[in-house]
Length: 91
Length: 228
Image (tube, rainbow over all chains, first blue to last red; front, side):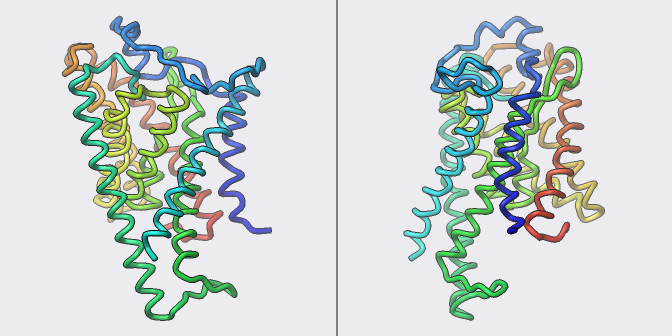
């Protein structure tokens, strides 16, 4: 089997692991913001998959995993679009 | 380290956004130039390159090049989701800037990181929309583009030293830039939060080095590239 398929399987696997085990603690910037009391300045805008969760899916793990998959798909699509534009330009 | 909207004042965020757009345009044109020259030269010499038993023409080569960039981007995106607790109720995740630029070069590294940040900000509210420019400057320009030169400078001695230096530079310099931006915006005085910010990111830098080393090894192994 082509070994290169793993280049795409591993990110999916990583997203699965992340959805199961990723820590929910605030990151370093958020901790600093909380420590010095400017965390409330953050404007909570909402987007389709805010905070890596898939809408209408109740299960937290499944929701994160689906959002991760969508993210990977969006990123791959973006690169596909750029590729086709550049192929067009290079001709 | 993704800055949400509201932490930065609008003038600074807008200025950085404009800077990021210019930088991204420059990097894209640089990539376009490199691949057309590179792929064009191959196409001129042999009319088509032969890899294994298959032969590829011009557009297949461009396709393969971007396939590789896309897979690097997917790795960085997926591993950025993985928050690992470091210390005092704080978690940290891979930035991936060094991983991207060591594998793809500074210009492609910058582009990959910018695309990831754009997707994260648009669809996942991981980093604000107006703060996107600041995030691109911090994590893609400093964290990936400049870190590549730190890697180049130190990897003459040893490859591991290069990765170590680049990862530390990437995380520490990016968090310093983030703090300067917050200071300029009046969210927090620079001197007050300096120690806290840096000590929290020290753990992140160690984590970055370990994960980058491991991922580089696995990625190159899968793609059958040498470890140099």
